[in-house]
Image (cartoon, rainbow, N blue to C red):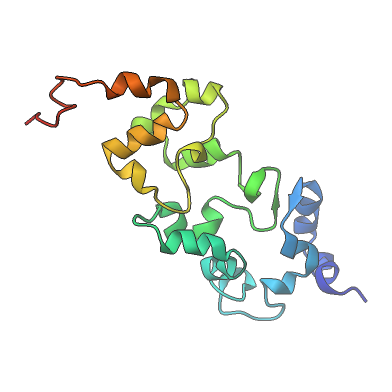
Length: 178
């Protein structure tokens, strides 16, 4: 008789096929399905042992620390399917078990507004990801003020720091625009 994951995959053939196609398998899936699922009954959907977020954070405590210390909560992390909004829990062809490449995952929700200029931008062609400047699991206080945003940009754009630090009489720069 099969045991552990192999026993589950005898019936869950579609999942078995998907797992065989993934480039990366989530470590708990390689071990035993019962790490996350109850085999016979559960009060949670998909026979999970707990709701998605607490279940994921049992192992990913460093993410929980980021979330708890964050001044602003990212909707993707705090609503809907939470972790599953961006991650595939069993396996993936993309880094961090993402549902797709990071930029595509982010632009699924952030396509409008200022983000609409991502496609075809210098940052896209430099193969930077959204996480180069933004953290999906926590807010970056630096990005919450215009001075902080400038500092984040200057992390990479070091050559222009002196140029933009020169005294200016532009009313926005001096904060005198009413």
